[in-house]
View 1 (cartoon, helix red, strand yellow):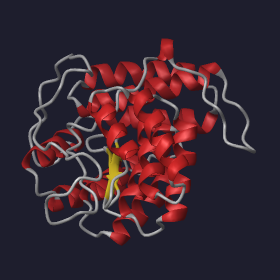
View 2: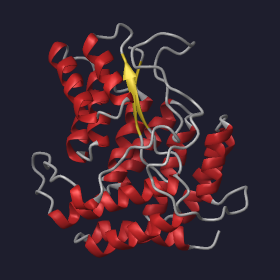
View 3: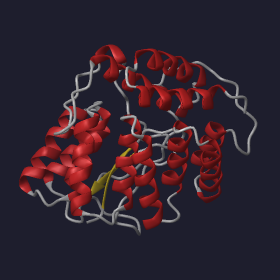
View 4: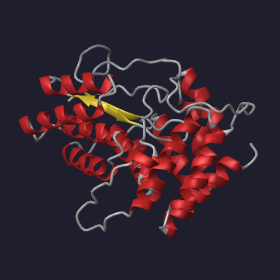
Length: 293
């Protein structure tokens, strides 16, 4: 197996990754093409066809999860990542992707476990370490967060990604002037990831796009669909779903340098979130962004 689609979300590096098989199926190739064009529903359908054709393909399960995460279908994305990891339990990027989905779901402690596992498998996985710091920040563990951010920055070889991490964490550079921009404004396309399943390069396994280019477009709160809860879990209230969409969009805005917009979204998410544990997580992240850096 070569590697997969990325799944991204996080304070400066949460970026999900598409993965491809060594011999890519037509459905995976079609899904990757739809994904690159921003047609995430069509991509998810194509990856479903790939799963029907070969239910043992960890890449197909991962890639559908990434597409679903882009659509805001967080619970079903996590379920797909679970299936992918059952098939490929030593794949660092799938743990990383599921960690990003867990952050979006407000399950920061579980995300820490996944990022830690990804870093154990691949000790130089700077994005997993950075995003673990983000999860720690959401849990109110600021010292652990800063340690992870500093370590990730020291490991990251790409200058654009390193700069984004430094800006977001407030480490190593002067704070940037906040500019209010749309979260959909594209950042510099530093690294263009090849289509899942295609050859090229020395590492056929997975190529993780720069977090700048892998940021998921989370749906705005007003149009967020009701997600299907996994078996054994209660259905989410509309208010909780809206708050999670707002929190996820806040993370995307922070990645794009729009700290003012991120703070506004987090304040709105805090007002809308009915669950006490998730409210505490949102409040911790809000304090982290509001603190002088």
